[in-house]
Image 1 (cartoon, one colour):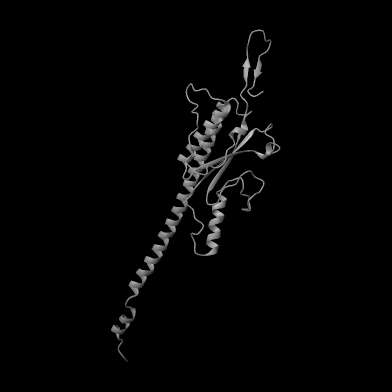
Image 2: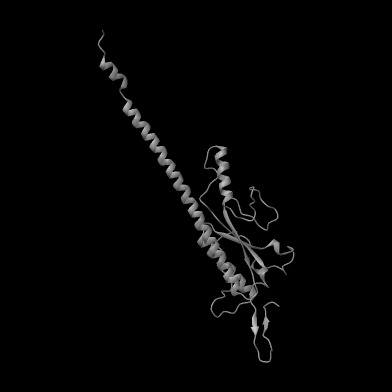
Amino acid sequence: MHPMNHTHQLGKQRGITLLESLIAIVVTALGVLGVLGVQMRTLTDTQTSLRRAQAIRLIEDLSERMKVNPNALSGINTYVTGWTTSPPTTAATKQCVGSTTCTQAELADYDLKEWKRLVERSLPLGNATTFLALADGDASSTSNRRQLGVLIRWRENERDDFASDAAGTAAKKVYRDAINTGVSIKSDGSVSTQDPTSCPANFTCHLQYIPVSARCAPDLRAGNSAPLFFCPGT
C-alpha cells in the first residue's frame, strides 16, 4: 500500500475560499446596482408626478384669473398666446392691480403675462401656450368658443441616448412618450397634424382644457317684476 500524500491534496484546494469570496462580492455588487437603479427610476417618477401636480395647479391658477375677469368668455380669443420664444416673459405694460382701471384686453394681457412668468419660475425650463379648443366649432370663428386649451411644458432629467444599443434607446423613447400628455401625442406615439399645437421634442407636457363661463349680474332696480341679468359682452 502507498501512503496518501496529504500535502499534495491540500495544494490542489488552495485558493477556493478566495474564489468564493470574489464571487460573493460580484453578486452583492450586482444586487446593489439593481437596487440603485430601481431607486433612481422611482425618484424620477416621483419628480415627474410632482411637476405634473404643479402644472395642474398652475392651470387652475389661470382658470381662477379668468373667472375674475367678467369679460373672459366674450373675449376668450384675447387669452390665446404662443410659446415664449425668449424667456423670461416680459411684464405687462399696464399693471392691473389695486385701483388701476384696465380694459378687458389689458386685464387679459396682464393675467397671461403674470401667469406665464409664474410658470417659468415654478418648473425647470417651464413654458406654456394657450389655444382655442377645436371641438367648440369652426376654427375660423370664435363666437361659440367656451373652452381654452392650455399646454404646459417643462424639461425632465431624461435623455434618449442613455443606452449604447438601439433597443435600449428605443425603450427610453417609449417611456418618455408615455409620460407626455401633449395634444400631439397619440397612443401609437405618432404626432397629430390636426391639433393647434404640439409638445416640443425633449420636453414633458401636460394638457388641460379650461371651461370659460360668463359671469352675469342681476339687475335689481325698482320697478322690475323679475330680476334681469346683464352678461358682459352682450
